[in-house]
Image 1 (cartoon, one colour):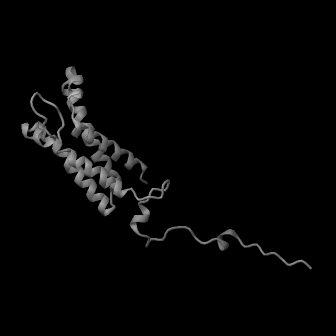
Image 2 (cartoon, helix red, strand yellow):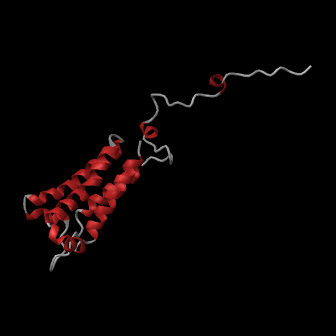
Image 3 (cartoon, one colour):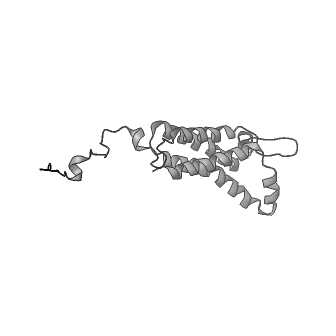
Length: 155
């Protein structure tokens, strides 16, 4: 006689794949599509954004002032301090793995907000402004875009 085959219900035969509450925070912050923790990339891009504040931003006549130099010009230029401040917050958030997405989005938007402000202020000379940008400004814009993309890829 043939042997009998027993079929178990699916919930009894397969082990549970849900995470428990004691799972490490790093596992909860992983990107489901790639399986990688994006915190190191956020720290790298936020660090690049922070460093760009001290690099030359524009070519003006006989000099190439950085964001740090430009902020000394007056109260309105203190807006530049948003870049290193939000970069530091994004780095801290990535280290603690708390509110990384929001911190990365705000830090990534900061150089674009400043650029849009100055383009609106000098609307008749925006082509001259864009042509005078130096590598520090391009690094800030590139790192800002990277932070925005990384923040969107997080849960």
